[in-house]
Image (cartoon, rainbow, N blue to C red):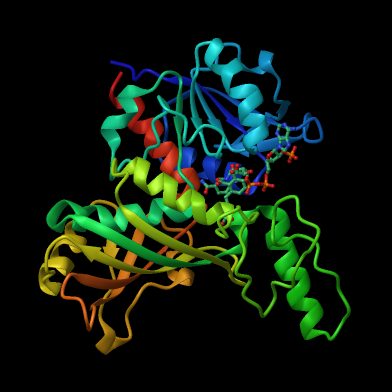
Length: 344
Ligand code: NAP
Ligand code: 3JN
C-alpha cells in the first residue's frame, strides 16, 4: 500500500531555522507530496534545493496556503499572528516555532519526549517551545516522573544562532575585527527593539531579548512560563538567567533542581541513560561531559556533570547541552509533525 503524503509548507524557509527544517524533513524522509517554500517578498523567485529538486520560493501570503496540510512556521511572531490563522482557515495544521501562540489557552505547547498527548488537543495550531525550554524539560522529565520536581534554578549559555543568521554573521565579523585590531560597531545583539547593542565576540551578554517590569528578560520569562505549561505544573518554582555567549550553535545550561525526595545519583544516571532523546555524558574521570561543539548537528539533548547538592539531599546539579536549531527548533517541530500524522 502506498504511504499517504502531505502538502507541507515551510514558512521562513530561507532562515536559520527554516534551513534546518528542510534538512530535517529530508533526513527524516518525511512523507511530502508537495512542498511550498515561503519567505518574504525579498526572497520570492529564488530557489532552494530539496532532495535534488530546485523549488522556487514564494512570498508568504494567505493564498499561498491553499491546499497546504501541514505548515511549519519560523518567520517570527508577527508573521505567525498574521498568517497562521489564514493557513488554519484553509485546512492546514500549523506547527509554530514562534512565541505568538505558546501561552494561549487551547494551543498545545509540545515537546514530544515530555507531553506528546497534548498534540491531540490542538484546534489548528500546535506551538513549539523556546529552544532553551525544550532542552531543559527533556532532561528533567525522567527525574520529575521518578522523584517529583519542586524547584529549578537555571543559567543558560546561548549560542548566537538563536538570534538568526544575522547574529551568526555578526559574531564572525566581530571576531575577525577584534583579531585584526579593526574598529567595529556592534549592530545586532541583544535582539529586540533596543537602542543599545553590545560586543558579542570574546564577551558574555546577560540579556536575551527585552527586559520585563519584574527585571527578568523576555527569554527568561519564556522559559519560566513555558516550562510550567509543558509540565502542567503552575506551582513549579523556577528562576532563570539567560546569557548570550560567542558560540555559533549549541545552547548550554547549568541547572540546579530540587526534587520532592532525596535523589540517588546512580539511579539518576540510569534514568537519564534510558530517557528518550537524552544522551548521558557523565564521566569526569575521563573529562567526558556535554560540549556544544559535540552536540552541534545532533538531535539529542546531552546531560552530564551530575552532582548531588552539598547541602540539600534533594538537590541536584547538571549541565545540559543541545543544538538549539535542531532539538530547540527544527527537529522538535518535525517530531511534532511526525507524531501528529501518526495519530491521524
Ligand atoms: P532568520 O535567520 O532571521 O530568518 C527569518 C526568516 O523569516 C527568513 O526566512 C525570512 O525570509 C522570513 N521572513 C522575514 N520577514 C518575513 C515576511 N514579512 N514574510 C515572510 N517571511 C519573512 O531567523 P531564524 O533564526 O530562522 O528565526 C526565525 C523565527 O523562528 C524567529 O523569529 C522565531 O520566532 C523562531 N525561532 C524559534 C526558536 C525557538 O526557540 N524555538 C529559535 C529561533 C527562532 P527572507 O529571507 O525572505 O527575509
Ligand atoms: O535567542 C535564542 O537563543 C532563542 C530565540 C528565540 C526567538 C527569537 C526571536 C523571536 C524566539 C522564540 O522562539 O522564542 C522568538 C519568538 O518570540 O518567536
